[in-house]
Length: 102
Length: 102
DNA sequence: TTTATATATCGCTAATTATAGATATGTTTA
DNA sequence: TAAACATATCTATAATTAGCGATATATAAA
Image 1 (cartoon, rainbow over the protein chains, first blue to last red):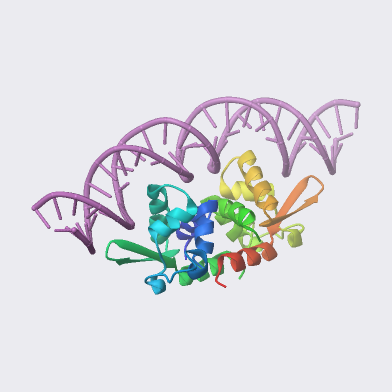
Image 2 (image 1 turned 60 degrees about the vertical axis):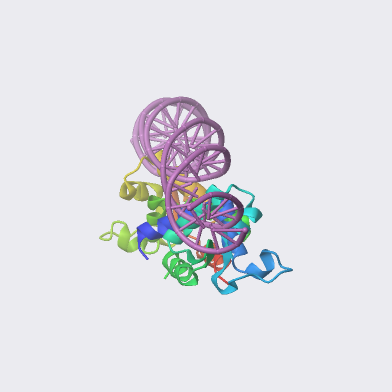
């Protein structure tokens, strides 16, 4: 983890909706349609579900998720026409190590 | 740690200079005038030293530090006309716990 | 192959943040 | 008390980011 990457991660985490997305993705089964089983649960949640919950436009949420994936906060997996996003705990742990002392 | 505070912390950590300041303050004795002993070392580093190292204006750095203190990333201690800033490891640890899973 | 659906990207304006100079405040020293 | 100094705050402009609609791309279904 270097300064530049850490700052990019900070930028992703500087917006309330994006922080919420990170929180929601801790428990997809609870936070997205808890009454029906999620498809590809091991790969996270598709863009549409996140967009509906966040109540922002499709383009905005897609951009958020793409940027969060670029800095390693999320992992994207494509299944057909759907993109699934899940948390990348490795990067999050590295980031925490970076900002912590020591 | 709630969503609002976490987002404020994210904002502080969304700028390269501010992330650098957090890094420098991990080792003040190494990063600020390593050849002379720092005054009030237990309380961190004064604004002027940080400003000189960051090479930004006094007002900019003062605003940075004030905001970082407001969201609990830094602890400020006044000694006479100097304000000393040090890392608040408790808040940093809480923030890491918040963004981590679980 | 056309149509429908999901996501990504582009181009734009509004909102926010960055940054500095000027000035105010608080503290020390002459 | 006045002058000097360190820091904080105010005000303004420049730069960046937010967020959306339009459109492009990719995949699936008819």
